[in-house]
Picture 1 (tube, one colour):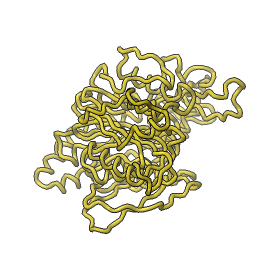
Picture 2 (cartoon, one colour):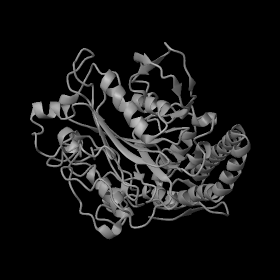
Picture 3 (cartoon, one colour):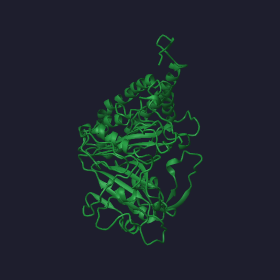
Picture 4 (cartoon, one colour):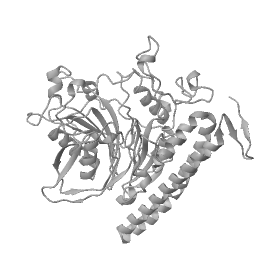
Length: 500
C-alpha cells in the first residue's frame, strides 16, 4: 500500500509491504559514501532468498560504482535509505515471452542500487529504469511502491524478451505512475499500472521503445490505449480471485463507503482512490491484521477453521485436491502466517532526513508481530535483527521469537490470539506515545550537531528493538507454559479445561 501525503492523517507519505514467503528477514545497513573512479559494484542473483540453503547466492556480474551513494537498508527486498526514500515490493511474473536469461538485474538489485543512488522517488525510478535497460532485467514482473517526503510513485518492470548486451534495444520494459497526493494505492501480485498517458511527463515515466515489442508480438495495436497491465500481465498467476480478492479487501477497509465489487484477475480496480478518512500508521497496521473477518470469505469461520477459529490455511498441492477443484486454492488474507516480515513507513518533509524517515518493522506475520520504529538515520542495529538462520531453529534470531508465537497460536487460536494482540498493542502504544517527544529531542540535537541526533536515534531504535526482542521471547515461553495439553494454566497455577 502507498498513501499520499494529503491522504495521511499527519501529512506523511506512507509506504507499506508484507513480504509473504521465505525471504531474507535480516536487516543490513549498507553505508554510503564517495567512491573513486574505477570502483565496481558486485551483482548477485536471487539475493532476496539468501537464507535458503538450497538456493545459494552467486555473483553474476559487476557494474561501475556511482561517485556518491547514500546509506540504505538491505533486506529480502531493500526498503529504505537515509534520504527518506522508501520502497515496497510485490511480484506478478508476467508473460513467459518476456524472460531474459542474459539479463543481469533482479528486482532486489535494482532496489539496492536505486536506494544507494537516489534522494527522491523520481530519481530512484530513473536510476532503476536506466540500469535495467542497460544491463538487462532477468527477473519476473515486479512492482515497487516508492515514497519520499513529498511524492508517492508506483514503478513496474518486466523483462525485454530474448535479449543480450549486443541487442540494439533496451534490456527491460518498465513504467511508473505518480499517485495523487490525496489518494491511496493498493496492489497484490498483479500489475496495476493501467493506461499510460505518454503526454503527461509529470505523472508518468516509462522505458525506451516500450510499445515496440508489444506491437510486434500482437499484444497491442497502434492507436489503441496502451494499458501496461493488460499488455505485460494479461493472466495473473494463481486461481481467478487469489490476488484480486486481497485488493478488494484492502480497498473495502480503507473506503467502505465505495462498496467495491469482488472482481476476478482479469478486471482492474482503480489505480488509486480517496480513502474515507485520512489514514494513520495504526490504521494500516490494523488492515494488515485482517483475515477477511465479517465477509463471505471469513477465514475464522467454517470447517477449515476448526473448533478454535484458526484463519491459517496450509498450502494444498493440486495432487490432493478433489477432482473438479484442482485449480482452486484457499483464500489468501492480508495477514499471512508465512510472511517473513512487514512494515509501514513514514516520510515527512517538515523534518530533517534522519528524523523524518521512520520505518515501523515487524518480523514474521503482521497480525502477531510487534511493529518497532527504525529511523532512517540510524547507523547500527541489534545483532538479533541482522542475523539468523531460517532452515533451523535459531535462538539468536529475533525472527524466531515471532515465528514461535505465531505457530504456537495455532494450537488454540481463539484464546491465544486475543492475548497476543493485547501484548502487541502494549509495546506499540508505548512507541507511539513516545514518538513526538523522541523526535522533538532529535530535532533539537540536529540543529546543533546532526551527528548527535543520529547517535540519539540509533540508541533509541536499538533500545526499542532490544526490548521487543527480549519481551517477545519471554512472551513466547509464557504462551508455551500457559497453553498446554489442551488446557490453560490459570493465575492460581491450576490447569483448567476451556472446552471447544
